Length: 250
Image (cartoon, rainbow, N blue to C red; front, side):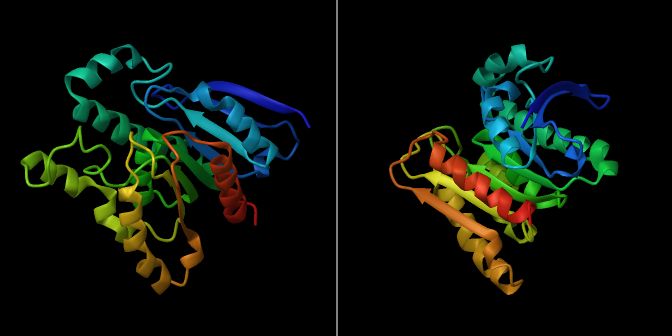
């Protein structure tokens, strides 16, 4: 089978996007999978992974995050992170979530089914989207956390400080009632010192009774890999692929 790779600039905001899919006549009938990269990466970083999604029957779509890749403001990212880490991360996470919603609006007439893989900081964006964006049916969130206060204790304020209270109020883990019915998979390593896994465990514990009450317990999957560091390994990639196939190709 042949495949295509297509770089485009989408919406009036000119969001840089790369798309990878099988070169077949009925490609518009295939589900789309958003690939949301992590901090310091760019959309092209995961192109080889996107070919794997294409081989599995999807069209993979990856935008550049705010302050990344071909975005006009990318040259300022490192300075912004150094001067105001929390502020820069807020722009990267919440403004990129707005960009994703804008892309989905533009593509809405095509009636695609949507899945998402969010990697590290891309997973933060996925958690934000999970609360409101119900067009995304299945998510595999990797090396990430829904709890802004436990992502990295060395860089986050204490809960009892004003800044800590703001982060707690914003954290998706404290809005767990909004997740269902998305098919949510979370993959973390307990040896990950960059993004701690405890937020995923906390969210899973809170979601279990919610999903059970709705009769959709099978749409919730948490996997903690013993000793795994902050690295998206091949067995985790396979787990993501199988999760997306389960919910989007049936």
